[in-house]
Image 1: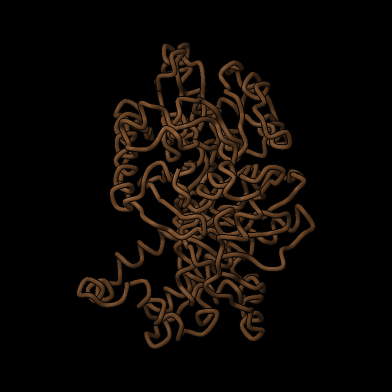
Image 2: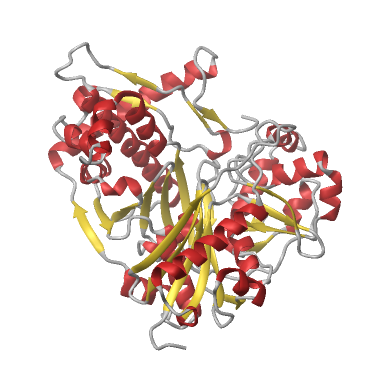
Length: 522
């Protein structure tokens, strides 16, 4: 093998897949991406099937593409690891063939959530105490749906795992599961970091379909001859357990130790707080996951749609900014952020309500709304509205910070702000002011692929451990300190925003308005 080693990541998101090649210093060498979509089965409203055959061809094409772009000798790729959207599951028969798979956005199992809740009072709280999950997102309702609607498929099932595990299986022929995404199935014992079949049994589901667990950063095999022929990879390359996209995003920005925190700002925003002891919330409001670092766990609080809301605002109202961008000018979001930077902190008192602070056991959001503005175009124009949206995402994050602090008694000294939203210096400054914390922004904004590559490097011996991998690869782009004069404004605004949101949520609960989103069975 050549002396210089490379590491590959395969990142399977909700809307696309990509293969990314890194060198040992964490520098991106080449990337190849393909978009995909998930089709609804017309027989089953809300379904979002995952096309394993077609999507594996897309992934293999990405691998071939990145090899062609980089020109590296495939034998110099020491290891490859995978990351993916969480909650997506794949079912296999006794010969290892995929017989059913769904994407994370699958929503066909609402009736099954209700059935599970009716099994006995308090079952969701009881299972949360072990798994850290509620029925809102996990695999239990989906497996029950398969049992009741596709009985032949259910009887044929011999194994289940998550999407990143499936990609590793396609690469190596070895079928395993890893804790950081596996735990989002709701069938894991969080503290033990392994399957808990008794959870499935309590829901009337199979107990014999759970494969061996390997930790993130452990080698599970090598690239199979079949995969090598399809992709151009070398059979000398190790295939390594990766993890869920949020957890590996934290690895990619250096949040790997107890007490560290990160906000991953994309379509959804995840606030992640690391802990070495996974104590559950008695009120079941916050999600608890395994981190992709052995021995570390995470409290996770999710804000719905901040990135999607920004896209809606841009596409619905900002035609001039889009025109300028199309003609070679600055990105439309950057133009809007520049205008928003001239609006005072607090947006002249205007507030908006989209995502609520997370309440995992009874998860719902009020109807979207803007409030407390006057008909003064000098003060209340599109830039004010845009800044209000930025502030709203930060206010939700402040609520998540408080929620996790209430559960753990701990507050981070600062946070890492990563992914798409962190590209905006304006938004990063707002985050520092609203949270009252130092905010650091890494050079690598899209961090999940880097996190997967670091897992690969640990298994290949390129790095001693995750901490060494982070020390050698994570670099910082900027940092922001809270400004006292703005902190006072946001202290006042936060209390008013919570009161506003409570009133808006009551209207939705009463049927006056429609919830932006509510969990099945809530």
